[in-house]
Length: 333
Ligand code: KG4
Ligand code: ZN
Image (cartoon, rainbow, N blue to C red; front, top):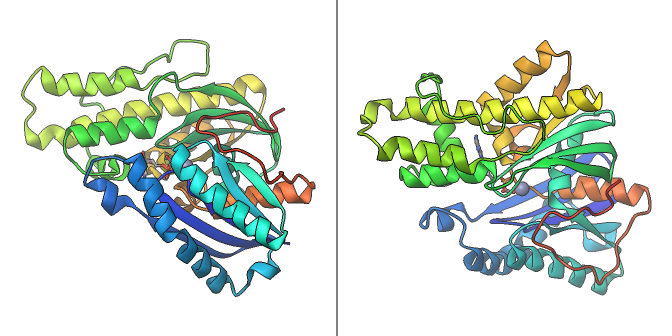
């Protein structure tokens, strides 16, 4: 079976071709240089850029894979959540292909797809608990099987990637903030500032990152911070975020009696986060699975993979599916 995957949920235009377990091509056209000028994604610009490049990106993906639209069995496309103008570009493009060729469409939840990304590289047995951390989402999902999941916890305010991006913007470090902060933090004092660990004591599985972001900004507002210690302050911020994310996720898995954890989304590229998870999961005898870095950030291969799993079960969508901007429980158990 050959699946064409399309993702335009945020600021990357991505198209991939998957044949069974093999990714034949995966093209990601990044808009980062455009949005970097503004220190964050400008939704109106993002959707216009998707319109400009999607056709070329799709042709490139088909060309690299050595297939034509006639060879495709189904088109899997991000239906949401994401910036709605951006989501609609990919969704309407996919509908156009399907209407013209008669191929079936599969609407995919972008956050669910982040959790499936790791399955492109290895087998992970279900059930598992999954943490998805990106610029738009911080959510813990419990998967019973492909397409069968429920939301266990999520952020009550900012997504963790958003907090990284906002503090990087505050210090004018560049966009996206996550990788800059990670690089500056390497080898620095992670205990330099004792930032709050929001909600660590509580029983819920939810997160809150707006307090941590405010504590960081207040640290700079309330005194002069010598430039040479800024990386130590950043390392302390990163440590607090990693601490909360791993603590809550492993607790959710432990409480559910599940010993397999999958982490995905852009922030899962962070090496310190991987280290903390591996260390703690090891201590608790849990399996922890991260996709490789290229599959953490937005890509259409993960959309194609999710579509492949759905197609295998005959779960196709109708051509009148609608895009959505917020996390909804499609096909949830
Ligand atoms: O999954 P993604 O590419 O797009 C969304 O669906 O949001 O995630 C982008 C987010 C940004 O907030 C970016 O700052 C963050 O992932 N990010 C990182 C790292 N690389 C990207 N955060 C921490 N450490 C990183 N190495
Ligand atoms: Zn994403």
